[in-house]
Image 1: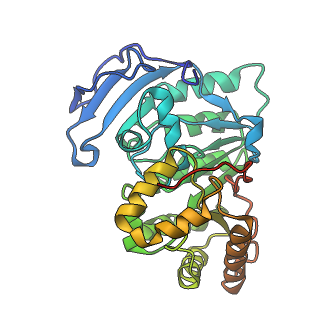
Image 2: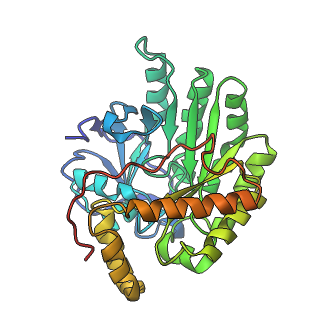
Length: 347
């Protein structure tokens, strides 16, 4: 059980305006403190507060990402991105990869305390820690639970290098802490901005700050002295992969002061694949045949399509002065290599 490191004795003292939620506990979270909040921003959401037993997690070697350790204070994400690759992780909790992933969020309320304890352990060797590589640590719940300031402060105090990948503008709240950390260790910051079209944003990323607000955050961080990379993630076939969309997005990224832009074509892993497919059939049914063709062999589009898309983003990056657009220093989530072909259906 991948969630065996979670336990949940009742928390002391309820948050103001909090009330117990009525849904039964998932089997994987016995004893969790369950809350709902009567504020509009949390309408329809349930939070499962747990006491985690560990927080700095090793990345499986097969992942082939440029970091070995991650911190994930939340599971599930109110960003509700229809394509989110992490959706299937919710099924390990006796929850579904669709609406439950968007509306039922697990909160590791002791994350800050655990980070400090694990960084102090003799076996810890100060390896780079990546955050935001599963679900967004600056999703809306962070405004209430405020776990990230404690985590960043611990990493700062131990001069431990770290990086953050986010769509959340709430990151700016922690700018003073990030500056302090950057004085003693390496701090990488990346934003995910796959496109700048507002109508598409509302359709596929309804719980996120708008792309323009994210790029305003990039500008603020850049002006504060940070080298901020942008992942064009994901680029959606038939929706944001045309030359006009790519050029508009790269131009906006360059204008925001980013130091790099990296193309990440859409990939559809199990869980995300089914949720995205139903959304596509409802909103853009004319694109279903194209997606069936592109993703007929598995989670990844054909290599030729990926290479062509990456090349067009690279050309746009050079045109707009982002000469290191092929590989940014803050690139925390590279495009995973395609696995062996697996026969799947889109619908």
